[in-house]
Every structure is written in structure tokens, then in C-alpha cells.
Amino acid sequence: MAAPSYVHGAHPVPLLGETIGENLHRAVQRFSDREALVVRHQGYRATYGELWEQAGQAARGLMARGVGRGDRVGIWSPNRYEWVVVQYATARIGAILVNINPAYRTAELEYALNQSGVSFLILARAFRQADYVGMLGEVRGRCPELREALVLEDGWDALLRDSSQVSEERLTERESTLQFDDPINIQYTSGTTGFPKGATLSHHGILNNGYFIGEALRYTEADRVCIPVPFYHCFGMVLGNLACTTHGSVMVIPGEAYDPEAVMETVQAERCTSLYGVPTMFIGELDHPRFGAFDFSSLRTGIMAGSPCPVEVMKRVQSAMCMHEVTIAYGMTETSPVSTQSSTDDPLDKRVATVGRIHPHVEIKIVDPETGAVVPRGERGELCTRGYNVMLGYWNNEDATSAAIDAGRWMHTGDLATMDEDGYLNIVGRIKDMIIRGGENVYPREIEEFLYGHPDVADVQWVKRREGSTVTDELLVEYCRGKIASFKIPRYWKFVDEFPMTVTGKIQKFKMRDAAVEELGLQTAAGMRTA
Image (cartoon, rainbow, N blue to C red; front, side, top):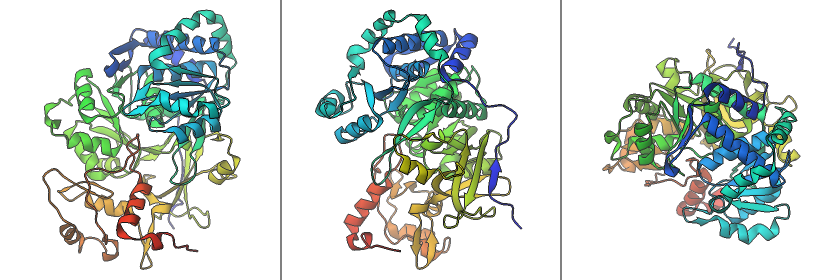
């Protein structure tokens, strides 16, 4: 009889029982004169000692402006050094940082500000074609709890000057009142229907998750981590910033937003040892016409995460980008975020074809979605996570919290997974993405992985051809025939140059679905109710 699909990440290294500010202070004591943060597009560099000083100034400036423990401070900005300073400043005064997606527009901004009760908003003047100040002006009258907004380009220096009104002793006194289980961060999860939900995360959750991510990557003060993923998402502020500061590593930011050439130039110029990205980012670098012009020899490791990671892309990253110790991480915002991660010394097939094994001090089980019973190893089921990393709940939304976290404190992810005899996990799809065709279950992830093996295919959700390719749907059908079951071969094919994307580089499948319904005239089928 097969073992049950349950694992517990027992680990000899204990959890960190401290706040983010306390942990940063310990890093400063060890690495004060070492570089901590490099933001190339702003020409900014700071040592750990300087980062601590600037975070303290911003913290005292916020206190001078009346920000108290538990107050919600919103930040609406692309990747800038001020974002990092605010992340640590709010943690040091016990304010709850509310991450606002840089892609939000007026309706979404208004919803996030009001739902979380933001009283102090820090924002960029603009980003790309978006006029943040103008949009805030449109909604501010409908946000009664918002009492102050600070535009980075106009008010940052004044905030730092205001720090003179609050003594170091008052800041230290405030820090002494904080507890590591306090809520410290609200991140809005983007659902395909309904309003976003604010996952409420604690010092304990995101600090420890960042720490054990860094442990898995074997980070030390010698590592320089290129972080092109956005700070507003866990990938940037936890896997990126907190994994670095818990180990004395350097946070290296190539730009306000992802640009493949800027990433490659930064890796070369800063001699980065680690690089992060979602699969589409790595594909954008590997297929860039100037890829061969850059030196990746300094790279050792990194993380591919955020969406299912194609095996063929992982293999190319390892070989062509010198990332021989690259890992895959799996998780969700609600779990701070990582629950599983491959190790730098895992066998090659496990490192490129699974999402690794359980993270330290976390539990995972895979259950039958209908009955809730744990399934045997090797069988598909819903992945559930329990442990220090599970969110405190959705902010001011008890119904959504109880629907996601059951009575046993298990977070139900909605992801379909399998667990092998050695505890390695594969994500095989989303429960809501599964297709039933002629009575057979079809998992899109399986078909996508197969098509990545075609030499003319660069990316698959719809099909993105490699440059210069003219591959057709007929040729792809022929490629599938005899290699995968006939019921798995797609009936419709769509060739595109790009996909609808979120700021984090995730593909927006609900937009793809809406486009397909419209183009194929499937409105009747799409609206059909089923039991």
C-alpha cells in the first residue's frame, strides 16, 4: 500500500523568534560596512549601516507624521530604493505595509485603500503611462480614512527631515512593544472573479520564509542577488529582500520594472551570483537577440517561481546562464509565500522537473478535493499547507478566510499536485483549470510541458513561436499525434507574439479565456450551468 501524501518539514535549524527590525539590526551588527542595496536605475548604493540609518530616519519621520502601531501605510510605486527603505521602516514602527499593485487604476486603488483602511499613502508621481497623482486625486474624496499622501519625488526628503522631531529613544521604545506575531503586511491577491482579498502576513511568517529561502540557496554575505521581480509581490519583498537581509547578501535592483536587457546588463556589471524571475522573464532573456553579448559566469543560483516552470526552460537556464544551482520555489501569497523548494544539490531530474520538497517547519498534504481524504503518493489531489507561514487571514474578510483555511488551520491552495515516494512535488494544474473532454480529465499543464519540447515553440499558453518560425497548427497536431493521447490534442490553436500579463509576469488566463470565448463564438457554452 502506498504511503499517504503527507510530509512534515522537521528541521534542526529553529525558527527565528524576532521581528523584522530585530533581525535587520543583527545583520547590521555583523555586516555594517558591506553593501546591502544597489538600485542601478537610480544610481543608489547603501551599506547595511546606511540602510539601517535611512530606515530609522523614515521610521521616525512616519512617527512624526502620526503613524502608529497597527496603522496601515500604503505604498504604490514600482521598484525603487525608497520602497525597500519603507518596507523596513514600517516594520520597525509596527505599521502594516499595504502593497498596492503598480498596475492598479482608479477603481482598484479606491478599493484597496478603503478595504484595508490606509491612512498614510506613499506613492510615485507616475509609472509608465499611469499618472498616479492624477488617479489619486480622482478617488481621494471617496477614501475617508486616508489622511495624508506623500509623493516620493516631492516629499521624501521632507519625511526624512521630519525624523528630527522624534528621538532615537522614542523609536527604540516603539520597537520594544512589537511582537513577531503582529500583522505587518497586507498583499492583495488577484482573483479571476470578485474583488481582490488582502492576505495579512506577520513578521514571523515572512521573516522566516525569507530566511529559509536564503538557507536553501546557501546565501552568505558574498552573494549578490539580482531582483527584477516587483516588490509589491512576495517574490520581490520576501524571496528577494528578506532572503538577502537575513544573510547579509546584496539586493541588486536592475530597474523600475522588468526589462530583459537591463537584467542581463546588471548581472554582468554587478557580478550577480543569483537571479530571480518567473518563467516568462527567463524566456525573455534566453530568446533576447543580445543574449550572447553578456557574461553570466558570475551566476551560481537563483529562483524560478510565480507560475508553472517548464522543464525545458529550466534546462536552458542551467546550461546557458551558468545557473547550475537554480531552484524552483512553489507557494502562494497566503503562505508567506513559499511551501516547497528544490535544493541546490538535488538530482538534476528532480531540480528541473519538480517544485522540490517541503520547506522547513511546514506541513503539506494532498487531498481528494471531494472528500478531503489524504490520497496515496502518486495520486493527484489538492495541495494543502499548514505551519508558521500560513497567513493570519484575509483582512476584514472572515468569510473568505474560513473558506480558505479550514478548522485544522490547513490552507487550501486550489492547486492540483502529486507527491512521489521521496516527497518531491509536482504541480499538475489548478482545480478550476481542469478540462473534462469526452469523460476524460485533461490537465493543461501536461500538454504545455509536452509542447515546450518542440523546437519552434518559445512559450505555451496560447502558442508563441520562436523568432523566424512559421510552425502551423497542422504541424503541431502532427507533432502531438502518437505521442500524447488523442483526447489531449488541442482542437483550437492560437498563435501570438505576447500574452496578457500581470505586473509580476503571470499570464492572465481569465483574459485568454474571455478572448477565446469571443473569437470562437462560445458564449452559449461558456454560460452553460453545470452541476
